[in-house]
Length: 518
Image 1 (cartoon, one colour):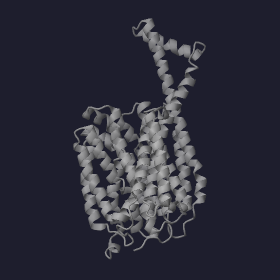
Image 2 (image 1 turned 30 degrees about the vertical axis):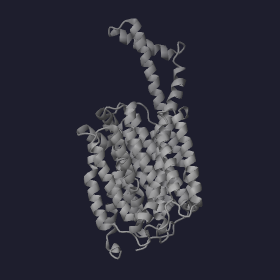
Image 3 (image 1 turned 180 degrees about the horizontal axis):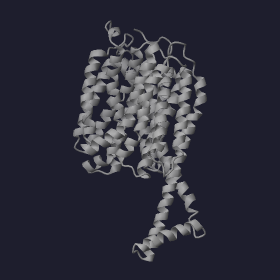
Image 4 (image 1 turned 120 degrees about the horizontal axis):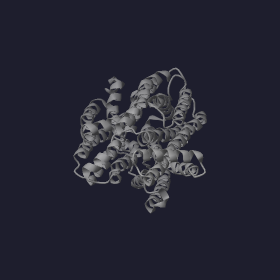
């Protein structure tokens, strides 16, 4: 323990972020390869989506348990188990001969990787003094923000150039290096007292039931037509019961697996809510834009991934600058600025149309990427600043859990809203395509004459012309639905600005109270 202060904190930062970046990357890197996985394993694309769902469910269940696991077994031990297990199961995913085994290995991969985000965050907050924590959080946020955006690009390139199995094999050298560095540079702080207290098995069970049911419901809801499905309705009931029993259990037990009383701190509670909204909007827009590019603009999966790169570029360039600004400007002001810029950038996306070119999406994304630094770094620092060191693991676990839950809700919401709004707009637009509309008749006759000039008979040309007009209506309706959702996401960011006033102003000269011992 006496050697710990002599270790350069940036070495510690690199040690924990290697595994974390790898784990966050795996949440999106497989998305673009589902068709290839389905074909390779002789299953339907719908069955292949369980490769994603199983990982996210296991990941979400372990996240809130990480603080308790670190205190019970030792933070260093859990970190090594997480990185080592994630690496081993990545290899097993790569060699999986069939879908059931691939899903099983993905469950274990998600479970072992679930603790890496809160562990890395807690270790960074521990390793850096309060006045330097903003730079550490900028480094942490860089990986958390850039990795999901890099995932589709990297996944598309690896799948097209090699095989989907290499999406898992690339984790092996990174994971091995992360394990070696963790063994050399990571040590438990003195306040970690391993093995004290009982094990709240009921709390763990209720939590697993609630989060597992919620994650599956959100992932499969649109596919199953939400509450029109008995399967989704059952999951909803299990989710509600699981969370109600879990909250009651944690408030009355002597050794809770998750310390919910931490939400009495208004700054922390507000920060967690804002992070949930941030996850909702960030991941929702990250899913929506590639859908628009591929379904309406004709982009391939790889081209859509490349078109998303400006967002990651903006974060990469601006995140270190925010770490410097945090020492000069009050964090709440930076956070408010980030919300304004992020809201404006998404509003710009709501003004797109079917004639949009590359630069029409480049600048809003670059701006949004830059705003992510102004959101993640101040928000993470302000939220966790007032938390005592003994509760830091629990605090970061809940903080990351709510971001992930917000992301899951955001993805489910935007896909459902875009589908439902497209139906509404298609119905409204089709009402104007009738025999009494001059524009409709002129368009129909023009298409019909063009097709007949190519040698098509009148009856077939009429059918083809009607089909073409119907396609135009569907296309415009889909475009209008994307505009609706982008506008709603922009409003959500703007509506969060007043909540910043609830958060306490951090003491001048440091990110929060002196909570980290050295």
